[in-house]
Image (cartoon, rainbow, N blue to C red; front, side, top):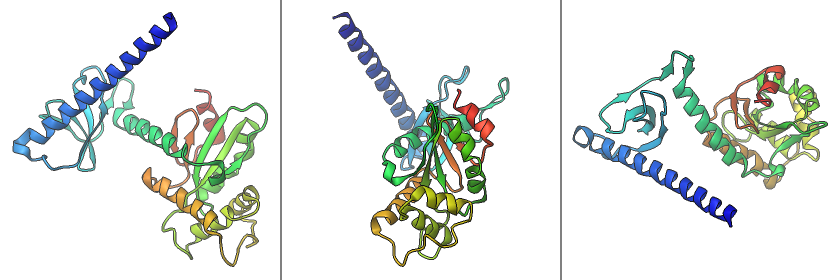
Length: 257
Protein backbone atom coordinates (compact mmCIF):
# COMPACT_ATOMS: atom_id res chain seq x y z
CA UNK A 1 0.00 0.00 0.00
CA UNK A 2 2.86 2.38 0.87
CA UNK A 3 4.55 1.64 -2.46
CA UNK A 4 1.31 2.33 -4.32
CA UNK A 5 0.85 5.66 -2.52
CA UNK A 6 4.45 6.62 -3.26
CA UNK A 7 3.92 5.92 -6.95
CA UNK A 8 0.73 7.98 -6.98
CA UNK A 9 2.44 10.93 -5.27
CA UNK A 10 5.41 10.72 -7.65
CA UNK A 11 3.10 10.65 -10.66
CA UNK A 12 1.15 13.65 -9.38
CA UNK A 13 4.39 15.61 -8.84
CA UNK A 14 5.57 14.81 -12.36
CA UNK A 15 2.22 15.77 -13.85
CA UNK A 16 2.22 19.00 -11.83
CA UNK A 17 5.77 19.86 -13.00
CA UNK A 18 4.90 19.13 -16.63
CA UNK A 19 1.72 21.20 -16.36
CA UNK A 20 3.66 24.07 -14.76
CA UNK A 21 6.20 24.01 -17.61
CA UNK A 22 3.45 24.04 -20.23
CA UNK A 23 1.72 26.94 -18.45
CA UNK A 24 4.98 28.91 -18.24
CA UNK A 25 5.75 28.24 -21.92
CA UNK A 26 2.26 29.42 -22.88
CA UNK A 27 2.76 32.67 -20.94
CA UNK A 28 6.06 33.32 -22.74
CA UNK A 29 4.49 32.67 -26.13
CA UNK A 30 1.46 34.84 -25.39
CA UNK A 31 3.64 37.71 -24.17
CA UNK A 32 5.82 37.50 -27.27
CA UNK A 33 2.79 37.68 -29.53
CA UNK A 34 1.53 40.79 -27.72
CA UNK A 35 4.83 42.68 -27.48
CA UNK A 36 5.53 45.69 -29.72
CA UNK A 37 1.89 46.08 -30.74
CA UNK A 38 1.64 42.49 -31.91
CA UNK A 39 4.68 42.54 -34.19
CA UNK A 40 5.09 38.77 -33.70
CA UNK A 41 1.39 37.94 -33.51
CA UNK A 42 1.43 35.66 -36.55
CA UNK A 43 5.08 34.53 -36.35
CA UNK A 44 5.94 30.83 -35.86
CA UNK A 45 6.85 30.67 -32.16
CA UNK A 46 7.89 27.63 -30.13
CA UNK A 47 9.15 27.85 -26.56
CA UNK A 48 11.86 25.18 -26.33
CA UNK A 49 12.88 25.24 -22.68
CA UNK A 50 14.16 27.19 -19.71
CA UNK A 51 17.71 28.54 -19.62
CA UNK A 52 17.91 27.48 -15.98
CA UNK A 53 21.15 29.30 -15.14
CA UNK A 54 21.63 31.50 -12.06
CA UNK A 55 20.68 35.02 -13.07
CA UNK A 56 18.61 33.72 -15.99
CA UNK A 57 15.80 32.01 -14.06
CA UNK A 58 13.19 33.99 -15.99
CA UNK A 59 14.62 33.42 -19.48
CA UNK A 60 13.72 30.83 -22.10
CA UNK A 61 15.13 29.35 -25.29
CA UNK A 62 12.64 30.16 -28.05
CA UNK A 63 12.38 29.44 -31.76
CA UNK A 64 11.04 32.61 -33.34
CA UNK A 65 10.48 32.44 -37.06
CA UNK A 66 12.97 29.56 -37.26
CA UNK A 67 15.71 31.43 -35.36
CA UNK A 68 16.68 30.31 -31.87
CA UNK A 69 16.93 33.17 -29.39
CA UNK A 70 16.69 33.66 -25.64
CA UNK A 71 13.82 35.80 -24.31
CA UNK A 72 12.52 36.92 -20.95
CA UNK A 73 9.15 35.55 -19.85
CA UNK A 74 7.69 39.04 -20.34
CA UNK A 75 8.76 39.03 -23.96
CA UNK A 76 10.43 42.41 -23.50
CA UNK A 77 14.05 41.31 -23.67
CA UNK A 78 15.87 39.04 -26.10
CA UNK A 79 19.40 37.75 -26.51
CA UNK A 80 20.58 36.74 -29.96
CA UNK A 81 23.72 34.70 -30.47
CA UNK A 82 25.26 32.33 -27.95
CA UNK A 83 24.94 32.49 -24.18
CA UNK A 84 28.25 31.47 -22.61
CA UNK A 85 29.12 30.67 -19.01
CA UNK A 86 32.59 32.19 -18.80
CA UNK A 87 33.39 30.46 -15.50
CA UNK A 88 32.91 26.94 -16.92
CA UNK A 89 33.57 28.05 -20.52
CA UNK A 90 30.34 26.34 -21.51
CA UNK A 91 28.36 27.47 -24.54
CA UNK A 92 24.90 27.10 -23.02
CA UNK A 93 23.15 27.73 -26.34
CA UNK A 94 25.06 24.96 -28.09
CA UNK A 95 24.59 22.63 -25.11
CA UNK A 96 20.82 23.19 -25.13
CA UNK A 97 20.62 22.60 -28.89
CA UNK A 98 22.72 19.45 -28.57
CA UNK A 99 20.45 18.08 -25.82
CA UNK A 100 17.39 18.79 -27.92
CA UNK A 101 18.94 17.10 -30.95
CA UNK A 102 19.91 14.07 -28.85
CA UNK A 103 16.36 13.71 -27.53
CA UNK A 104 14.91 13.95 -31.02
CA UNK A 105 17.46 11.52 -32.45
CA UNK A 106 16.62 8.99 -29.73
CA UNK A 107 12.92 9.15 -30.59
CA UNK A 108 13.42 8.94 -34.37
CA UNK A 109 16.03 6.15 -34.27
CA UNK A 110 13.72 4.08 -32.06
CA UNK A 111 11.28 4.00 -34.99
CA UNK A 112 13.77 2.03 -37.11
CA UNK A 113 13.89 -1.75 -37.08
CA UNK A 114 17.12 -3.75 -37.26
CA UNK A 115 16.22 -4.51 -40.86
CA UNK A 116 16.48 -0.78 -41.65
CA UNK A 117 20.10 -0.78 -40.46
CA UNK A 118 23.45 -2.40 -41.22
CA UNK A 119 24.58 -3.87 -37.91
CA UNK A 120 28.14 -4.76 -36.92
CA UNK A 121 27.77 -6.67 -33.65
CA UNK A 122 30.09 -5.84 -30.77
CA UNK A 123 32.24 -8.57 -29.25
CA UNK A 124 32.28 -9.81 -25.68
CA UNK A 125 30.38 -8.00 -22.96
CA UNK A 126 27.99 -5.39 -24.49
CA UNK A 127 29.06 -1.83 -23.62
CA UNK A 128 26.66 0.17 -25.77
CA UNK A 129 25.41 0.98 -29.24
CA UNK A 130 26.63 3.53 -31.74
CA UNK A 131 24.20 4.69 -34.43
CA UNK A 132 25.95 6.25 -37.42
CA UNK A 133 24.22 8.12 -40.23
CA UNK A 134 26.62 7.22 -42.98
CA UNK A 135 27.46 7.61 -46.65
CA UNK A 136 30.07 5.25 -48.18
CA UNK A 137 31.41 8.06 -50.40
CA UNK A 138 32.21 10.23 -47.36
CA UNK A 139 35.93 10.33 -46.45
CA UNK A 140 35.36 10.61 -42.69
CA UNK A 141 32.72 7.87 -42.80
CA UNK A 142 35.36 5.59 -44.31
CA UNK A 143 37.89 6.77 -41.72
CA UNK A 144 35.46 5.95 -38.90
CA UNK A 145 34.82 2.54 -40.46
CA UNK A 146 38.57 1.96 -40.37
CA UNK A 147 38.29 2.15 -36.57
CA UNK A 148 35.39 -0.29 -36.37
CA UNK A 149 37.41 -3.27 -35.10
CA UNK A 150 38.54 -1.20 -32.09
CA UNK A 151 34.93 -0.30 -31.31
CA UNK A 152 33.61 -3.83 -31.81
CA UNK A 153 36.38 -5.32 -29.63
CA UNK A 154 35.37 -2.91 -26.86
CA UNK A 155 31.81 -4.29 -26.91
CA UNK A 156 30.26 -1.48 -28.94
CA UNK A 157 27.68 -2.51 -31.53
CA UNK A 158 27.78 -0.21 -34.56
CA UNK A 159 24.47 0.38 -36.33
CA UNK A 160 24.74 2.15 -39.68
CA UNK A 161 21.78 4.21 -40.89
CA UNK A 162 21.90 4.76 -44.67
CA UNK A 163 22.04 8.51 -45.30
CA UNK A 164 23.04 9.50 -48.84
CA UNK A 165 24.38 13.04 -48.97
CA UNK A 166 22.92 15.30 -51.60
CA UNK A 167 19.84 14.31 -53.56
CA UNK A 168 18.46 10.77 -53.26
CA UNK A 169 18.01 10.25 -56.98
CA UNK A 170 19.01 7.51 -59.41
CA UNK A 171 22.46 8.13 -60.81
CA UNK A 172 23.75 9.93 -57.70
CA UNK A 173 26.73 7.95 -56.37
CA UNK A 174 25.89 8.05 -52.63
CA UNK A 175 22.30 6.95 -53.33
CA UNK A 176 23.39 4.25 -55.79
CA UNK A 177 25.94 2.79 -53.37
CA UNK A 178 23.51 2.69 -50.48
CA UNK A 179 20.88 1.01 -52.65
CA UNK A 180 23.48 -1.66 -53.43
CA UNK A 181 24.22 -2.11 -49.72
CA UNK A 182 20.62 -2.25 -48.52
CA UNK A 183 19.59 -4.61 -51.33
CA UNK A 184 22.59 -6.93 -50.92
CA UNK A 185 22.13 -10.46 -49.63
CA UNK A 186 24.76 -9.69 -46.97
CA UNK A 187 24.46 -6.03 -45.98
CA UNK A 188 27.39 -6.16 -43.55
CA UNK A 189 29.75 -7.50 -46.22
CA UNK A 190 28.44 -4.99 -48.77
CA UNK A 191 28.87 -2.02 -46.41
CA UNK A 192 32.37 -3.15 -45.46
CA UNK A 193 33.44 -3.48 -49.07
CA UNK A 194 31.87 -0.13 -50.01
CA UNK A 195 33.64 1.61 -47.14
CA UNK A 196 36.99 0.01 -48.00
CA UNK A 197 36.45 0.58 -51.73
CA UNK A 198 36.93 -3.11 -52.53
CA UNK A 199 33.44 -3.80 -53.91
CA UNK A 200 34.51 -3.70 -57.61
CA UNK A 201 30.87 -3.33 -58.62
CA UNK A 202 29.91 -6.77 -57.27
CA UNK A 203 26.73 -5.47 -55.62
CA UNK A 204 25.31 -3.65 -58.66
CA UNK A 205 21.90 -4.98 -59.72
CA UNK A 206 19.89 -4.40 -62.88
CA UNK A 207 17.06 -3.19 -60.68
CA UNK A 208 16.52 -2.85 -56.96
CA UNK A 209 13.56 -4.06 -54.94
CA UNK A 210 11.35 -1.25 -53.67
CA UNK A 211 11.45 -2.71 -50.16
CA UNK A 212 15.19 -2.17 -49.73
CA UNK A 213 15.27 1.12 -51.65
CA UNK A 214 12.65 2.41 -49.21
CA UNK A 215 15.09 1.74 -46.37
CA UNK A 216 17.57 4.14 -47.96
CA UNK A 217 14.82 6.75 -48.33
CA UNK A 218 13.78 6.17 -44.72
CA UNK A 219 17.33 6.86 -43.55
CA UNK A 220 17.49 9.94 -45.74
CA UNK A 221 14.19 11.22 -44.34
CA UNK A 222 15.37 10.64 -40.77
CA UNK A 223 18.57 12.60 -41.31
CA UNK A 224 16.70 15.40 -43.07
CA UNK A 225 14.22 15.57 -40.18
CA UNK A 226 17.15 15.93 -37.78
CA UNK A 227 18.54 18.65 -40.05
CA UNK A 228 21.73 16.67 -40.66
CA UNK A 229 23.71 17.91 -43.65
CA UNK A 230 27.06 16.20 -43.09
CA UNK A 231 28.27 12.71 -42.27
CA UNK A 232 29.10 10.87 -40.18
CA UNK A 233 26.52 11.82 -37.57
CA UNK A 234 26.76 9.77 -34.39
CA UNK A 235 24.21 8.97 -31.71
CA UNK A 236 25.45 7.03 -28.70
CA UNK A 237 23.18 4.86 -26.58
CA UNK A 238 24.34 7.00 -23.64
CA UNK A 239 22.27 9.84 -25.14
CA UNK A 240 25.11 11.89 -26.62
CA UNK A 241 25.23 13.15 -30.21
CA UNK A 242 28.44 13.86 -32.10
CA UNK A 243 28.66 15.58 -35.45
CA UNK A 244 31.65 14.34 -37.39
CA UNK A 245 34.57 11.97 -36.97
CA UNK A 246 35.98 11.25 -33.51
CA UNK A 247 39.03 9.00 -32.88
CA UNK A 248 38.02 5.66 -31.34
CA UNK A 249 39.93 6.26 -28.09
CA UNK A 250 37.94 9.44 -27.46
CA UNK A 251 34.70 7.90 -28.66
CA UNK A 252 35.03 5.04 -26.19
CA UNK A 253 35.40 7.48 -23.29
CA UNK A 254 31.93 8.81 -24.13
CA UNK A 255 30.47 5.38 -23.35
CA UNK A 256 31.99 5.52 -19.89
CA UNK A 257 30.10 8.70 -18.94
